[in-house]
Image 1 (tube, rainbow, N blue to C red):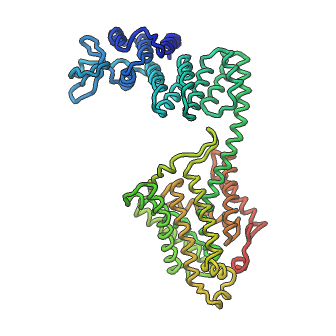
Image 2 (cartoon, rainbow, N blue to C red):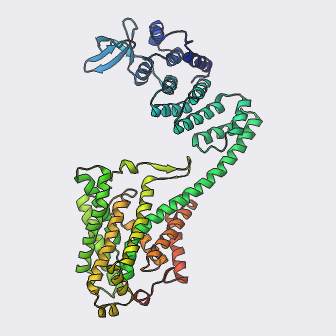
Image 3 (cartoon, helix red, strand yellow):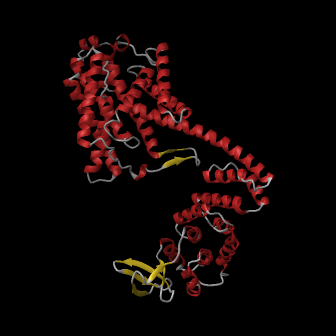
Length: 538
């Protein structure tokens, strides 16, 4: 807003709520129509401030039409009108009564000037109207809009609105906008008092306002010194919260790695099969979710819940088929299983490229997952990542209970410890092999369905997960579920704590983690939770 007009606009805006505006909206549009038609920016700014200050039912419609370019004047008599474009011209109506005034040709009417400087007056005026709206979202949007163009008038309106606001989020937004306006237009004493009592506000807009005070050479030394002190205190809290965010992201990354690696822990630990196609089973689960959401007539949330067990079933069957056709002939030859499953992974990738194309497939996030949990404006985590974290823990403890308390789990552990003795006890090791491989593959498919909420679903998604998954297994200990949990936590946290040190080079951060894992293996070649039996002997 032009500095010359600030006092005038402030006076009008302050007096309008108390009925002291000199003219009604109808009077302004009628008496100053010629000036609107003349198109002088300074004059139109003055008229825009007067219109924005009125409080009639039609004020909103006029402001919106003016901003959108639908406020016109008729060339013959400069009558201010609403103009709706038609095929051969405009359909016009009266802005106050809404009466239909007929049609005009395209050259018989012209838009009232609404350049950017004029809109800079109209938009805050529209926002000021919304501060008294019964809709909480309108009041929130109004507070955020007024924060962008702080004036003495907007500060007074925000303070007045704060007295009756009951919605916590709206109150916070109004307090923020009031602070910004105070720092922009208030006197030195008021600014110093506000800096002293505001506390360590972490909203980026408030931090930016304090930063501007600190950098403003027109401010007094006292204000700049107080702003520097407040800014230093805020930045300390920001640094602590950023570290907290890294911890949360590390836990989130750990849950992703746990979901992707837990199936691998079963197949690698029991069967000593280096399954390089494990990432593709995760991909199968993600694409199952895509097919369910795009093919079945159901809500996205229901589709996600249906796709999770279905993805497990599809990947389980695919794993059993792979074990029966390929893996069972390669037991005891881990390097050959690596080559064979690597070939299978390439076949699966190319097959999905042909069927689904190489492009990312859209997975719809349900409404109950669309959001975030925020402690403050800096520290928080998205709801989908919380969902992945919860599912990862549920799968871990569910699988742990199943393997410890079921007959299948007992037989699987027997085969793990000593295959020959297990056979003499009547255990069908061949059946255990394909069911175990199917179980590990099914969990990978389940992981893919869940991870589709936070990862891109494409034919290459498994490639990005297979190496970290093996790192988790090696660190935690081959064949140990607890090892997978601890390994995922260590690798995930290390990844997210190292990445901020190299913000422009994530590959370097990954390389550092890989070197650290290699160094760890030199001291603990069997991992943190070394297994006894066959997995330890081979």
